[in-house]
Length: 436
Image (cartoon, rainbow, N blue to C red; front, side, top):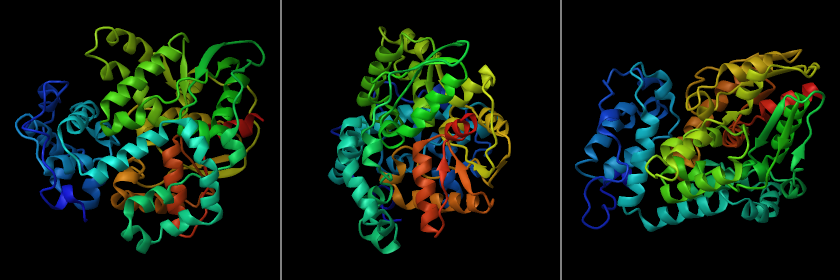
């Protein structure tokens, strides 16, 4: 793999600082929880790909401890190659909080390590575009034109990807855009049908709002059909999940606070994108060191529910009609591992008459999307994307269901790369079809 942080000395720490600073450094007591048993190894995507100890969770934990003494380019490289999928958290018998350790370590890297200019510029472009719905709407016509010219398919060709891997990855993952759909606005309220059971707010998100607005509409329709008034406020523009999971701490904290201010007046906040839900449930940790926000952020985090989680707990009321399909269930990492929500989506889907739900091999292995991972580390992301697409295709399913927009784009792209069309539907889309 030709990556300066993996194969060479790379850039150096900023200024004279040679170790983590004292601002939310990875906690030594959490680091010491790891007993290096190895249960995490078969579930770690990068260890599965390369068999490299330092590209395993326990290896990275050793490096995080090392960071208290010295920041090195290899340390940064191995942390960068982590997808943050949290499969190791699910697998760990010792309860190691790798998610919190990684989040804090990545923020330290972004503060204290000087990335190459091209790397910094690419990351800034991603954050400044994908966290801003207005800008995404502005590029929707270009995205639609790109698909009309079949540029994403061209960008997936190995020769093109080798010439300009990050540009090719950005092009290959361009969402299939409908200009009319991307410019559409949802009503600010969906009224409960029948006897009212409660009120919720629905997070619109950034990428979800623009390119998967139909999923938001179907989520609101299903919630309303089940007896809930659904408020769909315009703000916040972004919950901060993408920068949070990549270590862009100032931006993540700013967006977390804006999200809390916009939605804390609601009793329950429903989220239908796995990455957003995991970030919002983590706000108490994100803002733990700010006196004015610590308790407030935890109170808010306690209100957040994934749509599948919320509906399964509420129980069905609307009649389900048959949806005769064979569908493979894909576990989005930030739903299954980060939030621990696995049974609830399956419960909802199995209640749909004539819908056959099948399970792929290696459910716990990430598809390679992982926030911005497939845009900054396209080579391993492509290996994992193809692996996931093959496993899903091998089920013989006619469609996949996945509760995260990044997973949907990644699986669709790599199924096409294998010469197959494999539609990816959100569980809320299937529920909406069934309820009618």
